[in-house]
Image: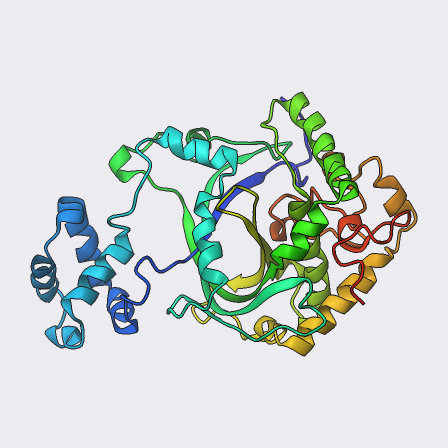
Length: 395
């Protein structure tokens, strides 16, 4: 047991899992079907039938039961294919699910990219759905050597679920242990649930150019710089009994770039820094490589946000944002202390290199890693090696 001030920031670290809505059957669920499913009687009837029949439910039985509770005229434009697709989309029927809670725990602990890769595949294209819509604004010529694609995510819906909390430190938490913290008595398996809420918003997606990224990652000095971050974390992990992580150069690059761009977008768009979030799509697993970044804002209002962030994805606007972010990152207000202190580690758990409150840190609600694993050096270079950064040649 440890004493702490009641309002201290380390008294409560929420463990929140979030997911961007993805259409399970692309194009098969129409806007009319989505509108119909918002009717309480429709969603309630579907859930009742799912608890009885599951994936074996016949579409005719579904329609007959719905007609008993909903005015028949609502079903005029809805075909049988749309009806059963809406049922499956609402309840996730037919998806592969883990057979036990322990498998879910393992997935949460290993940071596997299985649950983010589908998001990466959809957002980087131009999906058209009621809850996920993106368009291609084009890329400025000055950014083409560094970015493969940019997407204006005009509409997105995110679900956030609380699965527990930790105190004193932001440590790893198993799903089963987290649930025990949230309830005095465990719920039966058929009624087990987590508190969650849905928010709607908009964002900008950036994907790095694969060839430029591969050439940059292959440099020995880049790998050595990223290895420093991994070494610092390994010392913390060994002391606390945490799982080791291999922090690749692309992860530190995208994570830091996200922070720098958010800090710049705060001034360009007028959002508060706590209202913008990052979502990292990073993986080096063969066949599932990812190198993308989503910066988004979301609110609980049914209409979402007003489009100010999407507007910044236009080529000229985005070029200006990148130029300002890179320029500001070249010299921190606490330099040379920030850059020099970073050689030995600074910030939370000493897991940052050249990154402090004057240049790259964000409110913890905006960051996926609690302001750890940041380094301006891998973005814009260091004093000793100005060409080290991925964007060192960008002006």
